[in-house]
Amino acid sequence: MPDTRPRRTFAVISHPDAGKSTLTEALALHARVINEAGAVHGKGDRRATVSDWMAMEKARGISITSAALQFTYRDHVVNLVDTPGHSDFSEDTYRVLSAVDSAVMLVDAGKGLEPQTLKLFRVCALRGIPVITVINKWDRPGLSALELMDLIQQKINLRPTPLTWPVGEAGDFRGVLDRRTGDFVKYTRTAGGATRAPERRLAADEVGDDDRHLWEAAAEEHELLTLDDADHDQERFLAGETTPVMFASALQNFGVAQLLDLLLDLAPDPGATTGVDGSVREVSDEFSAFVFKVQSGMNRAHRDRLAYARVVSGTFERGMVVTHASTGKPFATKFAQAVFGRDTTVVETAEPGDIIGFVNAQSLRVGDTVYVGDAIEYPPVPSFAPEHFVTATAGDISRYKQFRRGIEQLDQEGVVQVLRSDLRGDQSPVLAAVGPMQFEVVEDRMVNEFNSPIRFSPLNYQVARITDAAGAAALAGMRGVEVLQRSDGTPMALFVDEWRAKVTARDNPEIMLEALPAGGS
Ligand code: G4P
Image (cartoon, rainbow, N blue to C red; front, side, top):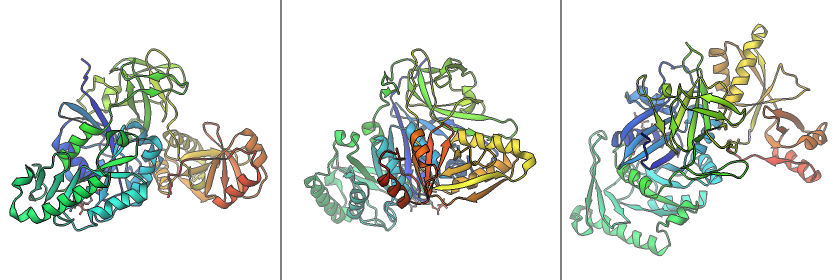
């Protein structure tokens, strides 16, 4: 039987240490967990695929795993898609955001908007993903609530529309004023967080004497916010102009139920999606999905390869034969179950918004579409501007075959972009990355998984632009630029610096030089 309950599919975007793991754990404990996609064991040294959830699982003994966590709340099915954190921050992190309908921006009240949050936010903005802001760690001293609102407005140009407003400054957390109902949601400190929600709802006239003074100050600010046009407006939120804000302490489990309620009440349902040819697939149409993440080598005993896909339309049924859009070939999904849960849990069906994992999906790549019925192909997952470039050579020439295979695999997974040219030959391809950490991941995986040591030598380029065949020909031989090809055939022009790229574009307006979205450091 298809599970037709409404879906909410979202990701948490934050800077390391803002409390994402703590919040995820609190959400999982609060709701009823159904599935953990991508459960994998015994991979301690596998940095590329070790997500924060894995680390958390180890540290806290809780079963939260890599790709997506699915739970039910108020008769909705909620899919929390993991954004890998600092240890493997790369394009992968950005791509995951193509699989969600909304994002929760988690902000440390003491630190404000930090660099990685800003980068991830830019991706949300680019994709038109509505963002709910959670100001976390209000139980600790931090910035003032109004200062934080200013930061949001200034740094990301979204109008903050607080749905709750803190009673007591950061570090003196008495609770929040629920701006929708006018109630006081009183906060009670619990020993060590605990699973019990430390929230008690009181009407304004029930606020105790202890809190009265601070409550009145909060009520005054609430009125000022209303006068200042800072009330929630659903249309403007969905249009990406405003961000609803709430105040929380993930560690103390305060605000977690409020956040779940907000997600259900405000975040968008999975919607219709347009294919590259302009045709539209409604969620009620036949099954289709696109791959947003590929992982491999999680189990060294058998060389496995997992492709995670988001269901766009229709009901997925395990065992159904789908068509792989880029090759036109049929693809059997009878192994789709193995990635769900720990060994035994099997997913039989999935609905739009859900994340499914295909095992042994050798042919599936990031961005690929699979479908049943009328052909559909979704637009490619965007790639971001690489800013770090190295040449790679096999550290042991007798293992050149392994080297080649490894590089090809990592390219397909999107761990790095691999660029080639006739001039450089196949022995030493250029690797391009958004962040330098990606090269460490490549090295680790080449040695441990593909059994081929690898040597890098840095290249003196900082900027990449997309060009075309005519552009490639025109740029050949110019100073401070080199043209190479991505594995999808797109020519990329690498420049020594931004200035050289700008001057070249200015002096040669006929050459196509297209910037990729900025993502890197
Ligand atoms: P991350 O996944 O975003 O990197 O952050 P994580 O949840 O690991 O939290 C980072 C640190 O912040 C942890 O402390 C965590 O306990 C703390 N933290 C998270 N939410 C809150 C909050 O609402 N209030 C307070 N006061 N602290 C919070 P740690 O000392 O690094 O680790 P741990 O030993 O406590 O686990």
